[in-house]
Length: 210
Length: 152
Image (tube, rainbow over all chains, first blue to last red; front, side, top):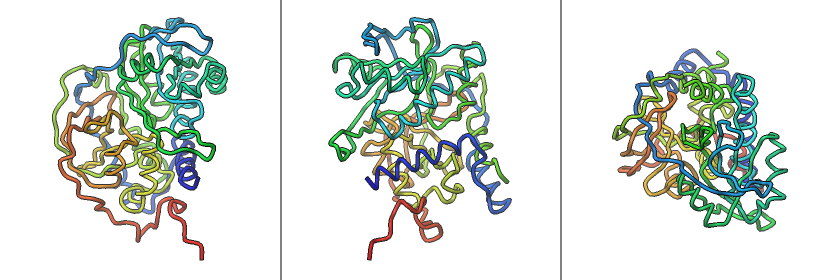
């Protein structure tokens, strides 16, 4: 539990920092060093032709069949996680909800979608309420182990049990990037979960405009 | 001097439409420290010198296990988000990612840029020089709760 507590503290303490000013630097040299350390060269248009995504067929939280295409014709933010996750999912799911609100304010509707990596515990009656506490438009997807594995393979997702919590429930390590898909389910780009809401909204807007 | 972390993140993630161009990846060999990107960019645990090396090793392990993507802080200061590493199709929490946390490694792989962000798919860790930044004596464990004092 001590270890889990450290992880939770690390993640939860960090959330507000991404939305606020961050740390004070002791002096100008330290501040400049940080700026230099974290600055990137101008983007050069280097490639990103990762072969991700594709056609799939899963089941949403209502029990309806759901493909990679969004039924409402919206862009999609896709994440792989599980309802009981207290680690990265507790950061990524609210982040996706905030991005959905942010893009909507810019006139771009987007559906946040989570594919479960823990179908045994993420049953239909668990999945819907757990996700919709983050956002009313959240879609949860599950399926048979075979169906889910096909989708994991499409996005090169791996999962492994790190340890079991005191109740015996598994705690997973799993892929944590968020994928931007268009309305048809075509992969557009990947979004690291360390990005700010504003930055994600900006990226989504750039794809919506193109 | 507030706001630098956010400025840094903004710089890291600066948007350029040209970054969306789809081309072939570029093979690179890069040497740098495997960092915890969350704590490094958020600044919540301290400045950049405090959230690397031996001081931040324990937290880096647990952030990786908890899903935070590992980054490679290169010698020139660039940060590469690790998409995959060797035979492990994930960016965090795998055996390799855990074994190299806070270590200075030399990685051979494919470099991509997208939306102004550097990514690397590491095909091989060609050298592992262990932890090189021994800053625990300066900062202690960061955060301090990462390692508790033994009960007397």
